[in-house]
Each structure stands twice: as C-alpha cells, then as structure tokens.
Image 1 (spheres, one colour):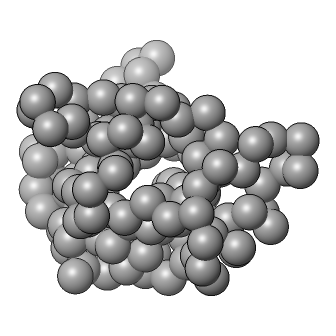
Image 2 (cartoon, rainbow, N blue to C red):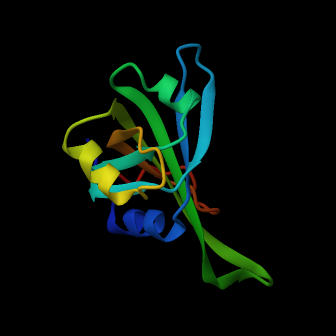
Length: 141
C-alpha cells in the first residue's frame, strides 16, 4: 500500500467532487462523480454508495482496481488569464461492503435522506501528479 501525501488529501477535500473510475469484467471503464467520501487515513479512502449501478456491479468481486482523480484551480497565473491547476490521481484496490466499521462510518457521514446502500473501501496503491506541466504523469507515492 501507499500513503497519500498531505497535499493530495487536501486537494481531494477541497474539490469535494472527484471522478471515481471502476472497470467491469469486460474491461470497459466506468466513471462517476462522487461527493460522499471520507479520507480514513493516508492509505484508505471510503466512498459512499447511494445511487451506484454500473459502479456497484463493477465492485462485486473483491480487490478490484479503481482510480480517483481530483483537481482544483489555484490562484497565481501560469500565463495571462490562465489559472494554475493542481491535480492528482489515486489508484487503489477496492472492496464493497454493506456492513462493518467502514460502512457504519460512511453511513453516519451521509445524509439520512439518501439510500446509503454501501461503502467502497479503497486501499491506496499509487499516487500520480496530473497537474499540467513537466511533472504530469509522475508517480509521487
């Protein structure tokens, strides 16, 4: 497993909505926006399932490879009229649960008005820089 650097954790928290990617048995990717998320620790992310369909189907087998991508705009121009963007891709191994401590923590964090069907526990394996520039694509953890 890998630890997310603090700057990655802060980026994810600041963005509030991230892109979450899963892959089906047929190899086809699926990406959805996700807001219900907890950074449990630097190597674990919890994602709440309220409305997943293809995503939940893709996670029915244990230890599925997934990715999370976040990016925010920062003040300070790279060029006139262009904001600096800071982004990261977190890859990991995911497991879907409907009971246990991770599910209960996620359920507590989600609105009671939502279905709160399950929890995806992602163990971080790799972290990459995706900000525009010479370090784009570089592994940082």
